[in-house]
Amino acid sequence: MSKPTIVTMPGDGIGKTVLPAAIEILDKVGFEANYVHADIGWDFWCKEANPFPDRTIELLREHKIGLFGAITSKPKSEAAKELIPELQGKGHSYYSPIVGMRQLFKLDLCIRPCRSFPGNPLNFIRRGPGGVIEEPEVDVVIFRQNTEGLYAGVEWTNPPDVVRNALSTHPKFKAFADVPGEELAVSTRIFTQGACNRIVGEAFKYAKKFGYKSVTICEKPNVIRETSGMMLQTGRRIQKEYPEIELWNTNIDAQMMWLTKNPEDYGVIVAGNMFGDIVSDGFAGLVGGLGFANSANVGQEVAVFEPTHGSAPKYEQLQPSIVNPIAMVLSAGMMLDHLGETEKAKAIRDVIGQVIAEGKVLTYDMLKIRGGPDALDKGATSTDQMTKAINERL
Ligand code: NAI
Ligand code: MG
Image (cartoon, rainbow, N blue to C red; front, side, top):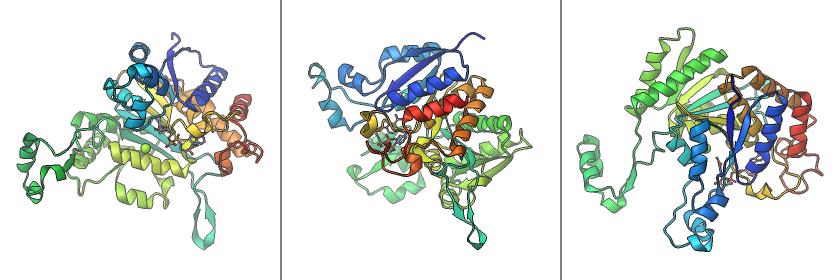
């Protein structure tokens, strides 16, 4: 197989710190690739009025695999003020490059593994019978539909007449018939059968490949009958091809309530865009939070791997950096899985597991102290030291 070319997009803030750390580890594990840098983020908004320049789009189109750090987004008015003087007042309007990327390349699968590493002080613990403290092993992988549903952006305040008239054809819209337009906001929740087939189909494939015993459809079909119903029906149909994997069905609200009761029972979870966002943050919180939350955005052609966290501007200037590189490194591991380098991916996860189990190298978040210039004096390890600790054991 020829060497893949990876488009690296460090972006802003700590993205510039954690992405190089992940590449060091990819090198160490023997992954052979060419890396090509691509511009993305705030600097390019300020200098070019485009946070996701065409040259970056071209690189992704050509090479198909991206590793992304994080970007900084600011509210519209602030964004306009930070443009260089030549670009001000020309009607440029800021948009999030990562949301743009997901839409442009139809990255319709968002995959978010939430696995606890034994010994991580951030793991969820609960009280068991007789007051014993239990630390359940969580190994959940969320498949979130990434392009449709409530986040597709088909919405209005004061909808135009054609929309209002169309809505009026539904008997349940009678309840809103007298609401003045400017007092009416509508956000649509559109699901398509094709997207449901793909997210559920890929979830089952993943469950089979990695040995999970269940796929849970986490929606709300008893109330949101059409869209959630379509996802559940799709689950029932596709499960027939996988008799060895059970299909479970939970409602998002109950799932969040029971999140801490039996998180160890779940395997692969599928949800639409918004419920997937919610349930994945919920499970990520049980296994270490932002320093550990890794993700993949996968389309039919292009795939981009990124930590869930943002650019953490308050730590951008801290030297040495104190942020946890593990979320980024695990995201790079997901890229290896995607490229069929499953043994190298496993080696990285195993070594991270060792470092955590040894309990000697802990970034400030793992120590549960406030981040800041004095975190290292309080016993936290730096980003570099954590990266080294992983590298030395590989
Ligand atoms: P954030 O994820 O940057 O930070 C939230 C909190 O977690 C902060 O206290 C931060 O210091 C901490 N944190 C984040 N990553 C960490 C790591 N690897 N290790 C240790 N601690 C970590 O989110 P926030 O503060 O809401 O947003 C900051 C900027 O990032 C904003 O401009 C926002 O728009 C952007 N953002 C970008 C995302 C992306 O690139 N996909 C996702 C979320 C936010
Ligand atoms: Mg979220």
